[in-house]
Length: 114
Length: 114
Image (cartoon, rainbow over all chains, first blue to last red; front, side):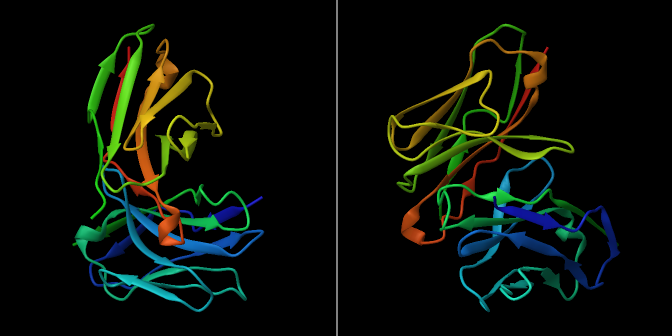
């Protein structure tokens, strides 16, 4: 079945540091890939997405590139802020499988210190 | 923007009570989902629905039921609440019209069963 493996946390960075959160996936079809962010006490918000190989999703300074050859979708940001502290989830929807469900990674807690 | 609302942010119920969690979306999405989120266990799918009056079991349906009488509303029912159902409950919706089935989440309901 489909699966998403993401970098275990927690991750602690200083403000203005570079961020990379690794995400790799296994899927039987041709998935769309997503990053979600969850701030404390809130629901998940869609951060960015990519729907085909070599697509780059971007939003709020975050980027991720759909790499089919390495089955990866790593989240990057060049300079993090304290307000980026949250839990980040990588997810996929596989159009070759049950297209209505998402498969989520376990989440990575990010803390940014001033 | 897609808006998904949940009836309560916080709820405290007693063991054995019948509990209703309501979710409403305003974007005419055909798919709706209920998850629970627990520390260390990530997001787990309870039930989902891909059309009015249609429902499918997710990974952990035991102790729950759902109702979808109107397209915009999806209710989660705990027939007889138990302490092990204390959790954060998240509702989401999606549409195949986007081609990628990304899900949009509500703010969550933190349920405590005493």
